Image (cartoon, rainbow, N blue to C red; front, side, top):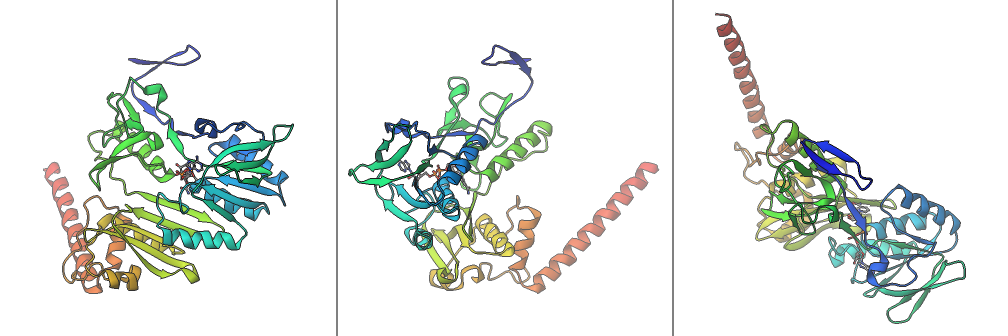
Length: 383
Ligand code: NAD
């Protein structure tokens, strides 16, 4: 039996251990910013953070907030602040928001949308210090170039770090996370890890990644449990990267990998547009703003199947209607063996009715044959 020693001195025995320590926010103090312990600075990672943010936001109605960081937290809290009648200035070091995923063209759409709602952007710089009052409340932030921006509150979303500290020297670490195999098993076979904290083999692209998202957290957790409960049955984790966000009345989803050439389609003016990333003639990633359920399902299927794309101009013109599987007549599109039933059915929506008829007939025949086989086996047992 293995044991775990808690900080309180308690010894807990276990057969299998699952690490789900997640991540912590990066704090401004770590960048040498003085006064970062002020009362009206908010981070957003846990329940207490969100309570504090909501309370301070309520006190600041009609006032001004500075949002530090142009990623998920920055964009989502800025939208929430505006909706709560707080005027927002965003400050981040890149040339556009959501730099990890968006291209300048995609970012321009969202930034324009925010600007129309009064949000100001200060890009390509970082803050250096705060001005505070006697009560230790921030009154302004000071930028690297000495500009001052008045603030009644500050929200900081400058990224996270995986919580691996406890395991240093005990488990193999990689890419800032705990290294796991396709069963979410760490370098210690009795110890599994899931979520933001793991660096896992991304089967689809043949490399190792650490992904920060709730969808991967849920799926990797379910996978670890399956691997522990039914090790003989479970396949290697085969995750399709998925990210989404909802701000104001906007909503986007992204599946796959944002590598290669980005091809835009649709019409940003009516808030319905998207992008495909095509690398070496293969569709690798797909983004869509303002899609419906079916379109988002199709987006995921395409990123999973990675069809070849021959005509980039036509792709830009047709978007999701591009004929990704042009020669499926009478022949199955190449299903990846690990596709889920919903993903498979969506691929069928791309295929002509003649093929679906053949496939349905094929499925009916297969079901019929298995029923006969079961009946025959039962009968033999009785003999
Ligand atoms: P992020 O990585 O999305 O963005 C960090 C931002 O901070 C970037 O714009 C970066 O350039 C900027 N930055 C870095 N150092 C800075 C500095 N010194 N000064 C100013 N800006 C600086 O991280 P986040 O927005 O903090 O989000 C934290 C985590 O929460 C992430 O894992 C994110 O995926 C997750 N999250 C996800 C969602 C969603 O999926 N919709 C929503 C909220 C949070």
